Image 1 (spheres, rainbow, N blue to C red):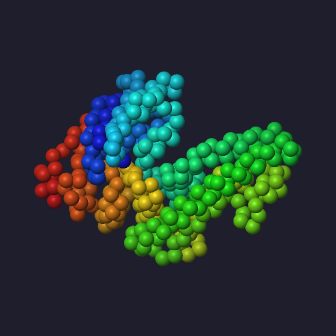
Image 2 (image 1 turned 180 degrees about the vertical axis):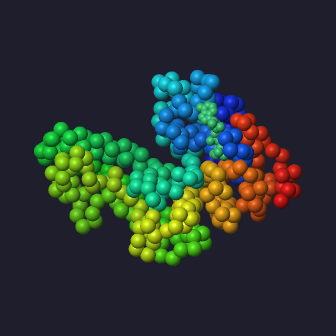
Length: 373
Ligand SMILES: Nc1ncnc2c1ncn2[C@@H]1O[C@H](COP(=O)(O)OP(=O)(O)OP(=O)(O)O)[C@@H](O)[C@H]1O
Ligand SMILES: [Mg+2]
């Protein structure tokens, strides 16, 4: 569902900005510190209720203001959805509305506006902890499997109860066992949904990698969070003493991982920094493609400072893949020319350009800019 209109008030240095984006390609360019990443931050906030740069809201609010507000319109086949969001320093005064109705859960925003981010932080997908890769896969599962959110909530509640009993030293069966059974029930549901999505994702990954990353022997494996030779029920029961000493539960769906290897070696050890970046791009492309195939909808790509991350040949490759997917893309760079080069085959009428200058966002006429290259 592409964004048709975006209004931003008092987010970082963006005092008041209005954008009428293209449903395909949006180039956002300007000098260092002008406000480009803040535009992406606004869109991400609309789709998740939080920022990708800060856990706190306060740093996002313009220094001279008491609150920030965002408004967006999204078009689907039949209707236009409206999202309004207001954030003050205090969470009790924050408000989020969808189509005029107040909503309290970020998951409603996420299902309306699924975004995929490619920025310097994305590269921790390879070298970071399993949590990064689990969240990556779960983004897909959440968006295409309707039971996932409730199963995850139920699982987390049971896990929390088990952990709190462990910390209180209560490891007697009659107290802990009901929570373990609940965990097992939900964990198997989560596993089934993850496996289905992973199998589909893997097919796309293999196709994208063979074109995008000049690497042999990259393999993907889903670790469900417990050993395959025994049931989770057995592993929880037999592991109570260990978990009691640890103070938390070792095995379970919270430990799932998407293991990435190159010729049998962990990818973060076997790949150069540049190769890791290409692999991350391949992962991001493949997941967006899988999302659109499984849901029949498009997600929105937010690509921050593309030239800083990839050389020109690979920028062009990424651009071509994003074109194949047909998603709405917001991409930033300091120089417009690098974006025009990367997307040199894109049709002109699909591109909208925004020049960001000291917190002002100005839509730029196309013709004059295209003639420059
Ligand atoms: N709460 C705030 N109030 C006002 N200005 C802020 C606030 N937080 C950050 N800024 C400023 O907002 C500006 C825009 O930051 P942003 O990261 O969006 O720039 P950018 O165009 O992406 O720069 P770069 O090319 O260096 O990545 C910066 O100059 C920053 O100092
Ligand atoms: Mg930036």
